[in-house]
Every structure is written in C-alpha cells, then in structure tokens.
Image (cartoon, rainbow, N blue to C red; front, side, top):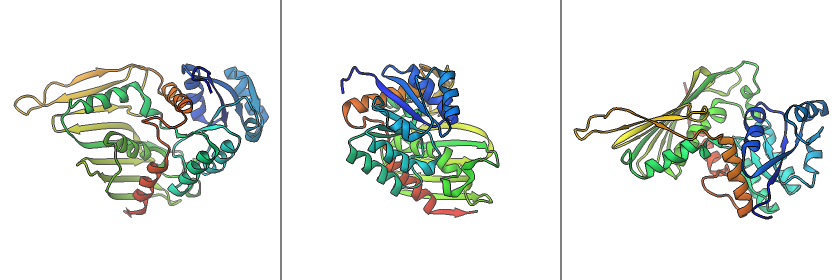
Length: 328
C-alpha cells in the first residue's frame, strides 16, 4: 500500500461515539476517507449515510466487511461483540480500530491480537486521548524534567449513569473501570512507560454486580504511584494530575478536551515554595483525527507505532485490578 494512498474506512454500527468521535475524526484527518457505514437495520444506515454524506450504507456488518474497497474498520460496538467482529474483520483483510476497552478480559484481547497478526492486519485500541496535541506536549515537558522526577499520577473520571444503560450488565463487560477507569490505567501506563508491579483496589458494587465506584493504587518500579478513581454514581469529573519532585501539571477535561485545551503548570520556587501557577495553552486539533492519522501511519508502516495501544497489556492490568479488588 502506498504511503500516500488514503485509508478507506468503514464503520460497524451507529453508536454515539461514532457520531461525536470517529465520523468527524476521519473527516478532519490528513490520511483517511470515510467510505461506508453499516447498521443492523438498513433504514438506520441509510439515514446516517444521508446525514453525513457517506457514500455507501449497508444493512449488515457482514455486507460492509465484504466490500473490497474498504481498508480499515472502526468497531464501536458493545464490549461483548469486540472479539467476534474483530476476528471477522481480520478474516476479511480489514485493519481494525476497536473502541476501548478492547475486550472483556486479557484472554479475549490476546485472542484478538493473535488473530489479527495471523491475518496480517493491524489492531489498535481506540484510546484517542493519547494522540491529543496537549498530551503529546505534556509528555515532552515531563520527559524534559519541567516538574522534576515524576512521582504521583492522580486520575479521576466519573459520571452518573442511566440505570437502564447496558454498561451495568456484567456479562457485556460493564462497570465503571471498563468504561472510564480504564483511562486512568492507560494514563498511568503511558506516563510511566511501564506496567505496575503492585496493585491495591477497593470497590463498591451495584445491584447487578458491576463496579459502581472503584479506587485503585498502582505501584511502578520507577517509583511512581498511580491513584485512580472512577464511578458511575458521582458527579462528572475528568481530571489528570501529574506530580513531580519539582512541580505539577493539572489537566481538566483530561480525556475529552474542548476546542481550546489548557493545563496548569506549577513549579517549585527557589525556597521550595510553589510559584505562581502558569496556564499552558495547546493546539486544539481534534484528538480523534490525530488518532486516525496515527492508525493510518501504523497501517502504512506494517506495525503499531508508539504510543499506540494494542490492548493486551492494558487488559492484563485491568484484570489484575478487578481480581484483587476488595468489596466495601
């Protein structure tokens, strides 16, 4: 495949994230074009295709995967469907961008990754926040030592969920950790560039058995502590704090930035007191578009390019967080 050839996309399903995330992301990318969308109902795909001016609309996922002109697919389906449709896409020779969490456990994630490797296609978990210009720049600043040596990563992500939402069903991969806490796990792993060696977790479960509120502490060999809390029953919070020996960076709306993203930098003064906070301003480019371009670059390269996530290591940590959780 020529490195200059646009990646032609198909999307499996009319999920909310498709509307607010991948459709504008593909359109604002420099590398890709949206060719087709599929729904289980032809009327739905026809309506979306008309609304978004998508050339091809299919009434089944199988029909879209049979289209020989599609290079890659995005899978925004509920968690329990990720394994089967990723395999089906790989069998059809399509590269796969799969919505997070990539699977319901590490065994499923590994099966997906192995199947895609055998079929010669790329699988990437859709953690769009990794590619946001703000996060790229913050990583650069931390690596340059602007807050000293990183020691603590604090992440809070919560919202109050509708009691009828499918994400409260444990058989479908429900729970606050899978839906929003996974961002905190992902952030701790990205900023440390390592995997945790110790994990301690407390969880409050709801009537269906899924985690409604969860807090976990991740200990890394490089001396970093990750404190992550997530919830389906608390007010909306979406916050990342990176604390080093010489200062801190606080990021509000950390994983869902607006058009003018900022962060707050604090550096220790010469007398070890905190200096005046400095507001940092960043490029507001669509992080979904940045992710799409990164995925396209990985396809052209023939392998995942950093900081892409294939999901296996991520799911191993999530499994460990849940496995050792103490109910309260």
